Length: 385
Image (cartoon, rainbow, N blue to C red; front, side):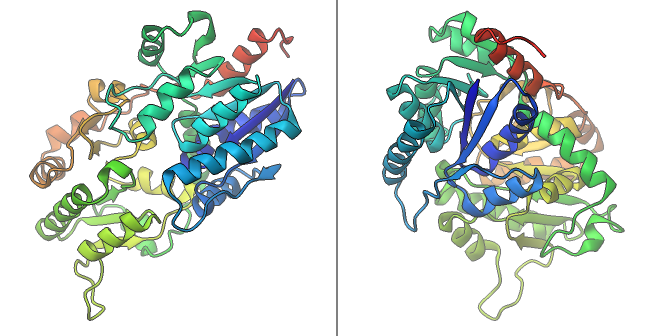
């Protein structure tokens, strides 16, 4: 069976890496990997970490490209790719522009679509934007839906997706994380821009890991988040705040203005470390090292509970409610006061910290990849190995 795996961003690469590695080892499948390079630099880091060499690289991103421009370019270019490859199944993951454009291209050519991480919903088309719409549209184009949780399956059933096409597999991000943790605990990678002491000898020093990249956070919301970080850095001078800053200029310029160097070149806050995006293995090492995480990332909400790390999410809603229900994740939005209050509580109140720092696995047991391959082979009548 011929399968094309198409993806373009760092999170897609992380979550599809275990699936690609398993497909390439399985003689029942002929696997072709195509990247759109929606995240060029950060995607390449993931590919290197998992030793995956794409068979096709569409290299779609252009300076100053609009969302509609990227969507049109992806649809046209992926369509041409599929006309040449003619796979039996196209695998996509998540909620990106690459996912929507690839699914539409495959649908137009009557090619079956498998959607990894299917069924996540916030119920609000504006949050996350445009990802929520990408998910919904992809669900109504896809043939096979690999849902990470029972809740995600319920969302799909409520939208009329046939139950026989939905498979609860767990999330492949846990598969990838467990592979990565084993590597970094054997040998901690160097984090460029960060004193190695913080990752090794100084592990008793509290470290807060911060990320932010969503379009809905651009502008005033990100400014409010940065103001909270500044206040926390002043209140907790012995705590180190590590922020790998996303390359999008709408993120990096706001963060640099609020937290970066002064006009004289001096650091505004000696305990705030603004560093370049970190390769996947290095980022896993940072998560494993951190006391807590402040983020708007969906993937981190899925990964951190498996490491017992409390997560404060700088969003008003989440499409991943399972870890919130268990107590590992809390929504704090972009309000400066609330971020400062909840972070301060975790840094000073051991009881509150202990409640959120339990190791739990709400998104899978590390065997999602095997379930996906089984579901594909069963649905298409392929003999089991």
